[in-house]
Figure 1: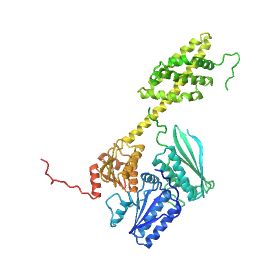
Figure 2: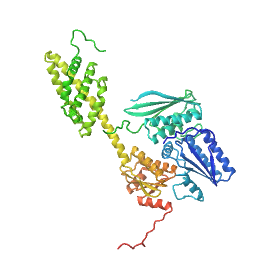
Figure 3: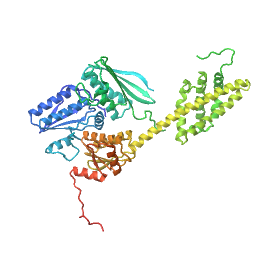
Figure 4: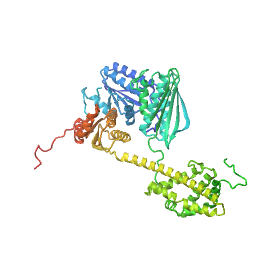
Length: 139
Length: 146
Length: 299
């Protein structure tokens, strides 16, 4: 659970490119400024290099508060505008329960159980209702 | 009837770096008292919301954490205080969707749903103090039968 | 110190009781060791029971010394509180009702009283009565303290059992690769819904389940609180990348939901667990076909 106590890391979150997809792995406790930086970095990278999807792996994140939730929602909306799709992968049960209790259900964000599932989802052509637990809800 | 065991930690809230310390401190304190993973996460998230409120709206402030007990149950009490402009309309601030400084407007109302007890004291010009308490949900003195 | 009457006066009745208790602690403990309460709790040896009895007598003497015979919070009880709790709890675990435990405690009084009366034979009748009253009050307070602690022990037992029940009552069943189900039986209150939600979501992670079915066939009623919990579970599952289907909504419950004007919103529902499984399999890309042509295989 907290064997490796998340230490704050400063600077940029590394963004990995896998073919047409950008892979971001968030870990531990994120500074607000780092989350902001990530949001900027992503939109610049997407605009520069025609990627079709972004996967944000948050399986190593212990809490998502309304600030980080908003950043995730904005990244999803932003990439949508740039004709790409964002999938948030690996949210922990405790984090999901807390977000729902907080009132944040992130309706515009695609989700997947794992990074692999997210990559699978992005490999599918853009149609609604892909089989599997990956759904986009319309408010 | 609550008996406070005194304030155990006092953390400043002056920068977003301090928010990280607040979250880590609350996480550790809650784990030590025996909070389950979900309850830990809820309390840490509430602390993060309230600390950010104090930073963004109150121009900085501090958090005090103390261990409390009532009827044999352990709890963690967190008090966030700032000397900012205060909240002019509390009812409105507690309702969802209200926000005055960016964000999704989940700050106060959202934090309230994540804790067991919630009290806010604020008036225009005199700063804001928010006090939240959560209790360990298991009976605290679970003993194995011998 | 509340010790005003010193010198020639014989001291307050409480002090006489204190002196008596200290003087006779061995005999009292010996007699108590034969009472059911001590005999059945301290089964290893009689000495053990006598020692425990002496500890209680000493505590009573301390309380008498502080002149607070009617105060269950008197400092003197602190040392024996846990022992009394253990004794009370042991008796309730043995199946005794609260009343039975109370009468076993009451049975501790007569042996002490008899000893006291024998000791005070020389005193005036008035003095005897005063001291007996003080002792009576003190023994009543002891009973109160023991019951208090026994009751809180009982509450703990109930809490512990409730917790165990919660865990037992929520099995997660793997129906297929990537599909888990939780059949809910009985009333859903807030605490139980919380456990259900956590259990289901943890199973989603452990089993890599893209689908989770919440079957409410065994839930007698769905009110707005239950509906809210169902919707929260569905929302949390979606955040994790899984889809949650609610099945087993009986006609009566469907009616209630409509009557109450509850909006299950985006929650996917199916009439039966079988329907829900069929839906999930279909979504996973599997097709269910009958092996035999329709109508065959049955005569």
